[in-house]
Length: 250
Image (cartoon, rainbow, N blue to C red; front, side):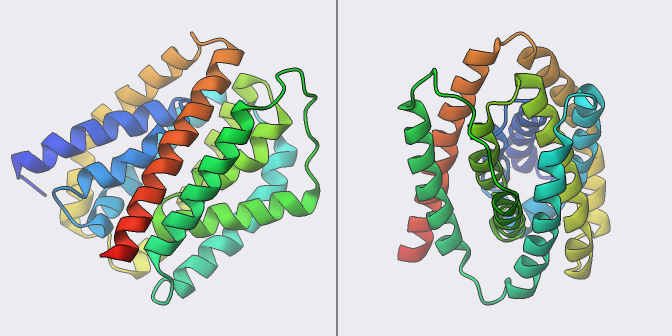
């Protein structure tokens, strides 16, 4: 188990942010791994956080189980499984920085277009193939760069689902995605006793912060909720683009 106080100084805020994200404020959790990567390697940070995410997913799924769009899940999850497999097989030959930069710039562009849209525009129907494609992109970027949220949001936001339906669908989708990533992390030898014990120490805070996120998000009306999601997409897109550009120029 890690005992360095500086690790926990970074890990505790990271887990709190992830809890708020899992509770419904989609996107803010993107800061979790970078925060922990200030004191440990990004690979170790991701390995410690994955068991925490699996438990946080349980809280989010339990809170929004009835609020989901099964059609979205049926389209996106098969693609996500393919994307995760591709990410695992290509991990050694794909530039994480290039993926971060591409996803970041695309996310920024999409978020800006969303903010400029006509508020009275009707929901946009999404074809079946688009769900599979965005699912594959989400699974791939989640496996490679822990950035599966933006492709999911780019596919689902135009549908203008009810607030709770969007949150519930997201909770179930990423719960499945995180479990699909477990074999790859296991194969890479990342579930060491030290990493698992460290995750266990952080678990109570992870559960409480997720429950707090659920309570807080239910106090936000639908219009403001989607505005928050759009601004979080700007934050996520900018962070990914910055990290990607810095990695390519290093």
